[in-house]
Length: 193
Image (cartoon, rainbow, N blue to C red; front, top):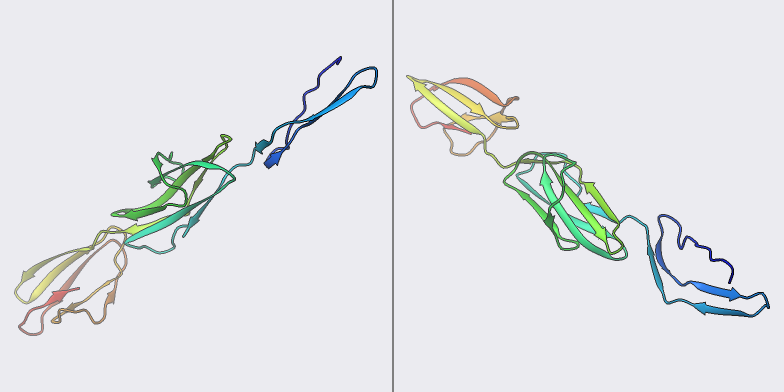
């Protein structure tokens, strides 16, 4: 043998199995061939799928399943954050579910999946809109008139003042706070919904 040459074993972004066939010949024409054991090639990045992948309207809580896609996934970590570029640090079983509860605002689930070849992918979900905080109301009564102050961290949608303990219809409002005045037309117990 007068020289040895190195060869690239697999193309980029490839995952699969293969063998190396080596044929060596001398100047007299004598040749020998050998077949290596099986090689596993993996230069392909793992894939991550979120189900569901975010939501479009505020919910009190949410959950998402993180599904890995790879020949040999070895570790999956996640973080729930209000930043889509946060660094995952909590281990999760493959195909595990992340629960989002007790949160207020816009949050992302960010996951990192690595495989046995050392390829890693980090991906953020679409945003989850979460609101677990109830609106607040305060009432000050002076004679037959009540001054009502309403507030909510993400925005009010409506209110009703009634003698019923159940709301039947709402007066639409917008914004995160609203002050209204209500004058009772008769004696009784009034509720703010």
